[in-house]
Image 1 (cartoon, rainbow, N blue to C red):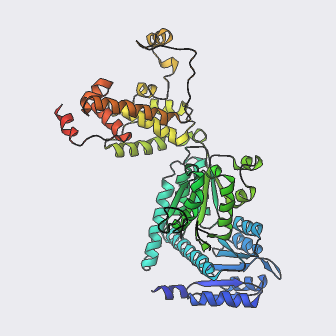
Image 2: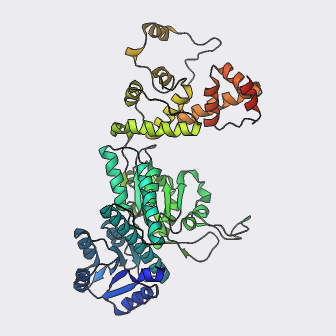
Length: 510
């Protein structure tokens, strides 16, 4: 079945009280090969909906006998699967946001740009097809085999399921997150993902993208806090040749790179106010103007943003624009901290240890019940990221296949006092400082903002210096540091230290 024939099977309903606009929309859609039905009010719309199924419903916001949003709400109440695109008047940002919150797939603003109109409807049709195939798989218990396009859609569904599985955990809180991701992925509504640092906000964003009709397009992730303020506009919107010294060719920005896909704006709360204003316009108008250009160009992206900040409080403090917050927070997904889903710890540890072992090329260590119990007692304020660092360190320091309690005691988890031998308790109470070390009680301790990065940096410097002094003989370096060869190899790999390839033979010989 060719694309044109497939499109003939797509029914689209246009609801608008202006005959000229109905004709314009109908012509644009017929030229794309769709079957189009057009009516002028809500009553006629329901007659058509009672008579047949549609893939997409396009409705004006204001109609002679009511509001287009009531049509959308009734579709949802009746559990209809039609994708609804709402057309709003210019400047009616509130109506557009309300329609998205009510479940609209997308919205368009008058005067409608026909190129953008075609793009939005094509996305809606693709999403409807994907959902229909998913429904058939669920009901029939097997994948559809109706041609290349449907096989491609099946593959996209498989990618989406795999992305959801990467959100490890079956606690009530995590099941709610997964259900919400699967539900909201089907629309174009902007999503704001919130949660503490290290909870997995980017994983949720990638699951949203993978489960959407845009999964075949790019997923562009941007850390807003990592870009210098003077480069923000160029990075987001691109540059044109000659716009500044050294600009020898046109360069796309994040918006252009994410065309047809999703743009993930991580740490959105760190954007300065001046850039917030420009971002708001790009989201509202769905067009951007590159640095050095005099014209705007349309962009077709879905915005997913994330932050560990309380954006509502940032708005109250004047550090974040209220109108941008309103635009980004159409749908919110809150990721619970690890301390609120401790039931997921066994599955999380198993998943993380499997990945750590695969990266290190070693067997998966065994996590004993006692070690798991001690991990449950740890504060883990850094959430899953801190848990991963803790397990990395435990694996690096372990000797056998099991992770030992005393190994974890040497990392971020202290051994409970009741488990510590009495002799060790006495030594800990009176132990003098190491020989040659001068203790200055008055000297302030500089507390790093990221303890793990600080420790990794110090560990790397020590390893590099020791390797240089031993001529990169890892056996000798390990002996000098009180490590095994396996331990030092693991640390070198984890900290990405370059070692001459010819040293492997020396290590093996030793």
